[in-house]
Length: 395
Image (tube, rainbow, N blue to C red; front, side, top):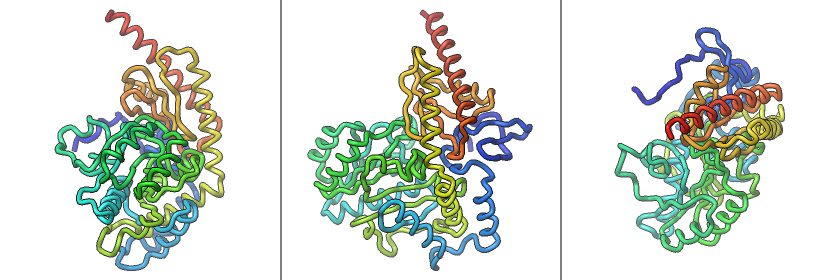
């Protein structure tokens, strides 16, 4: 089906932070499969682990105990300070499960129509429920009517959140990305996350932090909210947890950890041994290879390099992000930069129309970071010159 406007290349092989297309041309991977390929490509530990697992057991179903599922759950609980985990296949599924948990919590609080507070700029998925939680009207079009379960407020505006709770006592959860990804690489303010935690405690709400894109070491900590020193009640994960193998997870604690009972939720493929092995190998490599420290260092290198190379350029609104989750917002839509970078041997993309999004694998080297800065900054400078000339010609 024609659901993607694909770029005119087919990728067939990868090694480290580089990939090759069908014609043999090499590209630096500045997108890592949209924050999925945490360990880059052909990582020896991951490859060996998956090869071994394929020869042992791929799938059994959740009708039986899955020892690797227990092992990965124990690791995630230890890293997060939370209590238990439900495994699924994607970030959308993880977010759907979180929304079901919010509804059940609301019903337990006596509300016939529980609602969830969500945010401007949010993206949580493309199912009907997660689409309704998402803020982008472009992805809503053609799929109305949306669910009316959501109360939307501006991000980083505590007064608006407090007012929404006062006006809508049926709100049962606050659902926010620790760093908005599709919305333009917009980190939630750390003090704001702490204030939301306090609001949830005060009003018996679930704090649900969507870490699907920003989690698993990408910002320099295991989970982006750990920079704020807060603890959520529910945390959806996916993308980078499996380093390319489809996986999703919902981590919970406290009252949220006890919401689901047998028959409340389920999955056929979720938690299968292959995906669990991928998760375990990913977490092991991040820890043993110091990849969180590398993400923080390479991210700072890229952001400072972009700031240096783009200094004085009118049309650059902001360079922002955390670790290897970086956005460069420009003054007008800039999708053409994607093709320009591709022609120069770099994979990136543009999100929220005007934000150049950079999500390299956590194994990125210092030399590769410099290469990325040179290509991106050059493409942005060329774009800004062309866009200013177009505006002048039209005047």
